[in-house]
Amino acid sequence: MTECHLTQMLAYQFFESDITEKVLELTIDHIYSGAKFLLVPHVDIGRNGETKKFIKEVYNMFRAMGVDVKIKPDSYAASGYADKYSKW
Image 1 (cartoon, rainbow, N blue to C red):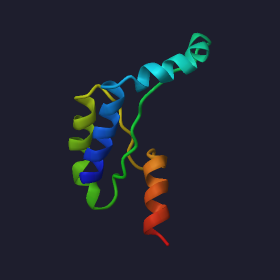
Image 2: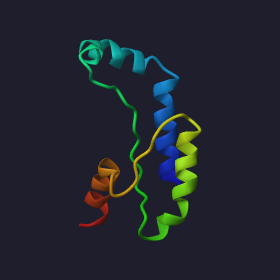
Image 3: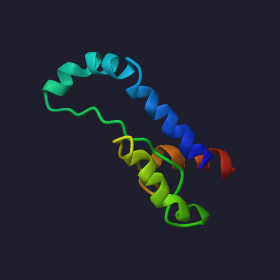
Image 4: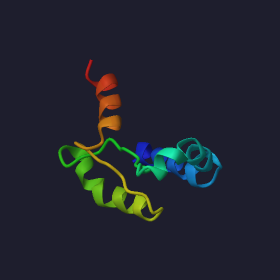
């Protein structure tokens, strides 16, 4: 849950700063062409193992911010990073 909370705090920084505006300025031509700019945090929890009991709580944490979140197996960023350091 600590990792999920840290991910939530990082995602929140995109809403409370001018980072999103700067990214949109850089990508505006692509957006006009149909591209989308989505903030989708990836968390290292999933339906298998001990973390499954936190899925509903984690989804609700991010939905309260208006943000979708990805969990295993779709959270390839978090899963890849976790596997790199936990499965030597």
